[in-house]
Length: 363
Image 1 (cartoon, one colour):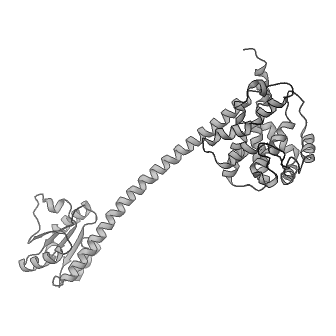
Image 2 (cartoon, helix red, strand yellow):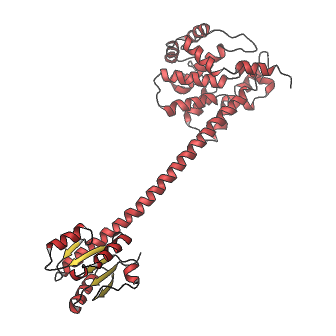
Image 3 (spheres, rainbow, N blue to C red):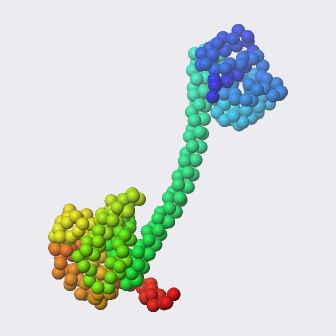
């Protein structure tokens, strides 16, 4: 920015020289003159003037309006009135109107330098505030844009997950809507258990939607086999949690999502797969999902059996409480009226009839 520019207007040459030397201690660029510059353009006056120091005679007639114009054109310009004996009414009026900033005795050079340093510092701080405000406005604008972009990306991300799992469900029309249904079941169960954090509930939803993503790597001849699977086929099916976890690990989803994908076939008694985890060692979100998954499986049509009603599903889930499922989660499930669970299923599988129609079309 360079040194500050100070214009000193003092008629007496000796006093003018003494005051100029005193102000030079501030490291400023000093222009000392006897009279106010004329109407002709003056680069020093109009280009970057920081401080004006002058005697009372300057503040008469049109000169006051000239100084007011200068201060308007250059916000932060400081003006010092040099006066030992001054009309108090004039000084107060000039201070009130913002024409001057301070009155200094012309014989007190220490006071003059102190006042000049104060006004220059004030001007410097004001300019920094202006710069910081501009930066803050820019940052706020960028933050708003980034939040908007993040929201758009989140919507695209969620839509991609849902479309991916819908496509996976459609590999077998019999299980269409499965991922959407168990996602909703899982969120409701989590809520009953006291999970209130919106992010945590959303992570559970995403994990539920993606729980079977590993089945992308399972051949259709196994996945769609109408009869019972043999031992080798079951071994391949049991790989899908680890395969799915390997897929999502690359896109850096949060651990709650990965826990559901990797551990949704663990059992409370430790006889599940792939890791044989037991009781509370199994992540809570995986324990929640396991029950939600079973509820949908029991009440859905499968090639090898007919669907059972929700009363039968509740009896079966309660029967294996403590072996397959966490008893606490079973109690949470049982605390909600069966009609509510049926309503959730109806709302999330409303397109099922339509899909069953399309599977009969010969294209």
